[in-house]
Length: 169
Image 1 (tube, rainbow, N blue to C red):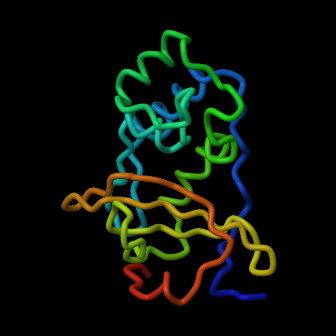
Image 2: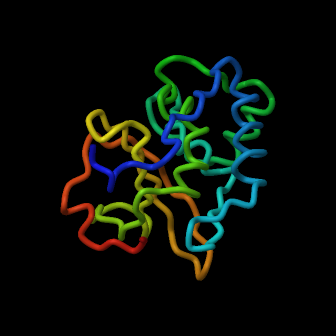
Image 3: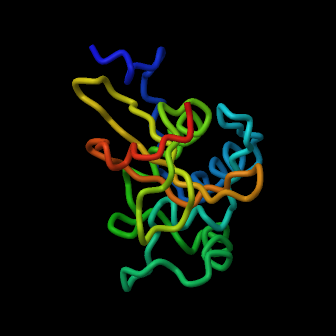
């Protein structure tokens, strides 16, 4: 076993039920936007309501991300935007519950390696085992002592390139 990759209690959090878009948005606001989330260095990790659209990869009928996230949130609250297969990423939406442990108990925090990507730091956590890794990456912008979430995504493996500049531990 690779003990460098092992985190005690490394069980995956429960997936969120995907029955109603309004409930999912409420969960996101209460558990991520309104929560005081701190990374292991003591930096607050902040989530903006408008980022919900990007985090679940919500798309319009034309397959594009809505141009105005605030209006999309209002439409969700009114029940006009619903959970429709193909219009959001099922995996990313159901795994919103994984973001908090990813931010508060990462395996590593590294400089963002994506040349064209937005954000400065990438939080890495393996929710699986060394033999069967389930990596998730949370990318954040650095705003002084605050970190603002930009995106989250799965990753099959983590290479030396991604670990090039380790910021923590």
